[in-house]
Image (tube, rainbow, N blue to C red; front, side):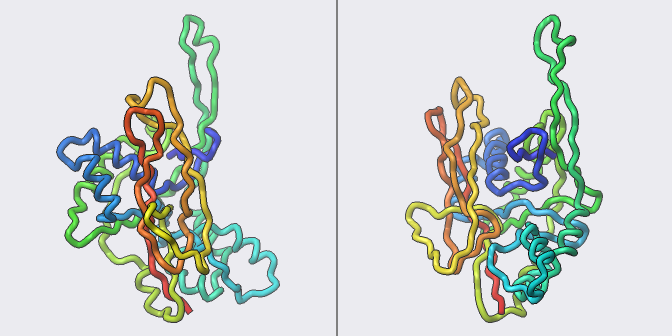
Length: 302
């Protein structure tokens, strides 16, 4: 799979909920009889279903983003551990309690994450049009990530009790055939889905934690125009979304989406907010949507 990180020769190994929603919306337009794109949009705005970002797993170990909170480690003065902890981007769900207790081992967590796969660079050739094109090939490199046999990505999909989630799952399955991310015409980004309805391990571990409660974001999000969010004791990071509109009917020439800044997955708040799906289009012929409905996990800890 290929997910751009600013350069064609590099790739990320995960994707975000807003990337998946964009793919769902496009697929709904072309998949007659499943669910309309307008209905999908309304359902997302109403939080009838909520999606997390895609996170890695290896075997029975499911990773979540390291919560953006200040944790006092039990190992004081160990600069090597502190540097390893700072570099750590993910922790296993089952290690959440130890994380908040300051007892997590950043070296072992990082080593486990290294098992999920490898980055590769594939050399490809662009042949310009013209009678002498074959004599002037234009080579370039494409970064990609290949998962190990027992590894892959998972998303958490939460929905209301009375909501029919099957059309959304069907769209995700269709996306697996065509792929997600970049360089899909080269066969990248294709996947198969497996639905697991069991409760997440993180829900089980919180039973042992009673003192404080935070709300952990497992997808990027941003409050709607009618919300005032509680920033007291919030610890967060933000990231900017940008890019070109992927629609042939939007304009005669490629146009960029409006830049959009949202709170990053892993951010922590004392109270949750609703979020929204925002129009980030501009001078084109139709709206362009950015999904910013956060997936929340309530976490209680000592």
